[in-house]
Amino acid sequence: MPSIEQQLREFVVNNFLFGQGGDQLSNRDSFLEKGIVDSTGVLELVAFLEEQYQIKIDDEELVPANLDSIDNLVRFIEKKSPTTR
Amino acid sequence: MQLEEFLERSAGQSPDKIALVCGDQRLTYREIEEQCNRLAHALSAMGIRRGDRVAVYLDNSAEAVLSIFAVLKAGAVFLMVNPTTKTEKLAYILNNCRAAALMTHAKKLPVLKDGLHAIPHLQNIIVAGALTEAIENGAKRFANLNELLTQHRSSTRPPVKRNIDIDLAALIYTSGSTGNPKGVMMTHLNMVTAVRSITQYLENTGDDVILSALPLSFDYGLYQILMGFAAGATVILEPSFAYPQVILQKLSAENVTGFPLVPTMVALLLQMKGLLPGQFPRLRYISNTAAALPPSHIERLSALFPSTRIYSMYGLTECKRVSYLPPDQLSIRPSSVGKAIPNTEVYIVDEQGGRVGPGTVGELVVRGAHVMKGYWEKQDETDRVLKPGPLPGEKVLYTGDLFRMDEEGYLYFVGRKDDIIKTRGEKVSPKEVEAVLYTLPEVKEAAVIGVPDPILGQAIKAVVVLADGSALSDRDVMRHCAAHLEDFMVPKSVEFRASLPKTTTGKISKRELGLPMGGR
Image 1 (cartoon, rainbow over the protein chains, first blue to last red):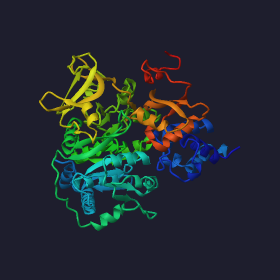
Image 2 (cartoon, rainbow over the protein chains, first blue to last red):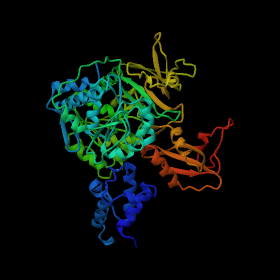
Image 3 (cartoon, rainbow over the protein chains, first blue to last red):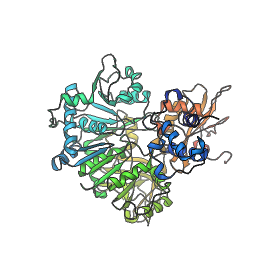
Image 4 (cartoon, rainbow over the protein chains, first blue to last red):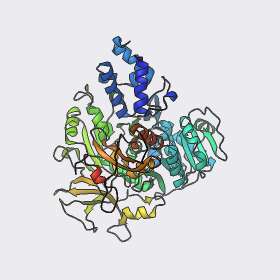
């Protein structure tokens, strides 16, 4: 089974980069600064996380520190859903 | 009066007041005034003259705000370019207005590099942020914004004014029905008139704190700065609305009193589960424009912000703002966009240009000192919208928007005369997207329509017929569009069909395309 990082990367590349250019995206890159996600992108991302990892994300958690890079996402998912480790 | 005098007056009256908050930066009116004066002198020293066009290609940032007022103080004309604009369109816009200078950020240089040779008039490129690589590009001169400020640090007084108020202050590029963007020519008088009218009905004062996450390249976003500075208020400029939670935290932390929104932002706010009624007692007003809010959203917004006045407004770039609904009317006629703003007259005409009475649908016409001078070097397109008015020689604005009026004179938006799409509050010309689709060799026919979307208002949909033997996926199409169009213009969905419905004259029938499959 692919790692969380691989799963998240695949989702981001497929949905926000239309399947290409993933090699240009480092795990530390801010999605906002790179212009990869906008407000509807964040909604799609949250829907994916809730479905894929069977978690509930509160409003207070919808912040860049949790969601704005692959590194941040991995950290957030591991914290929210320890069993996925 | 000239537009930059809003800043100059507020800097004179309340120099130590915070004018602008951008991330960690908190700038006073004096700081902004002095920085803008330095930068204006630097622009003049570079050879920027009265009436020259200077493009600002920056994200929402303090540098963008400094650039706007520095350009004005230098007597030049600013134009904001959406920061997600790709190389070809940027080149088109800069060539169209023969921009003499470009203000941008070091991180945008990779996008720019390949296009610069195609912009012959552009001589000066002023770069914010650290220049990480040396750029060699023929005769073009690169300068670092901070270095310019340091070089001109003693020039804290404004340059001598040479403009009068009928000179141009800005070009605002807007999606044109022919596909190419058009530069809306706004004079100082146009913009000062609009600012005064809007701040009058919003009752803006120096006590206001306005939070805007609207792009400065969108006139609604740009005017938040102009209005805030006119009132001597504080503007909190946010780079994005992608994280509404962050915005809500700032609403509280900064004691925000004014919160301009578009329906997409309202829809995002209403999705938040933890938002409770009455959390923001300091918030004096919310404004909404670009499209009407659905009545259910108005109801929920009013419940969540019980002490906040909600202004439904309507306007178009060509005159900035047309009408607003007094907040006390919102519960009585929620779908109305109200009456003309102060110092503006509106009426509705039929196809022959005759005025129609209440209840009859026709085109809305706007009369006022805020109506643009025309589209930059596009006389035919200008003549289609600026037509003779009541006074001899006068021109009034035909909006292309269909409206009706009720018995008491309140306006209701009915639809567009053309097929322009409104998504996320921004106008998108289907032709512009279709032109990009047709550059794909596999595409035989393409049509772009707006489909209803609960968040975006309208979502852009591409309907494509592939050439025989070609294969493309929806992702291929979207990726191609994303490489050539601003983010908000990229189709959200792609449908492949064997053929497109045609009218009797052989044109693609958008009306039929908009219907569900088989729903004729």
